[in-house]
Image (cartoon, rainbow, N blue to C red; front, side, top):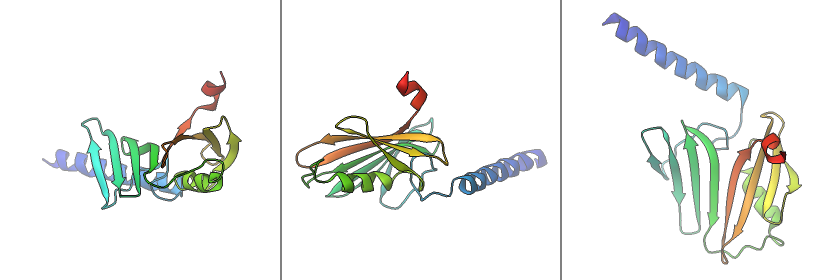
Length: 153
């Protein structure tokens, strides 16, 4: 019985220390790509037994979907439902939306194509992309990280 208690305490302590280490190494805002998901009251959870899944914030104007694996955000889908968005006119606004879901130090690197924005975080040494899809009215931005070496191969 004591051994079981010791194992449970060890697991809890290890999990707490890992969380503290992650927050110390990456002092980013909550719910950015690469961070632990911070579940809010307005999120609906669609998580399966493998701890992979999706958390969704839905409103009449927008829908934000977080794809997670083991509680770490892998990608974000940001959908504007009703407002017309023109990529040429709203480019700065689109970049601002993307930056809300990237680490604090991420910088815009340029356009890979007409629909793909590229960003880079030096702290995380990670490249990010945001793919713009026009819905007319509205848009979807799919924001994720990618390995630059695989991309350029």
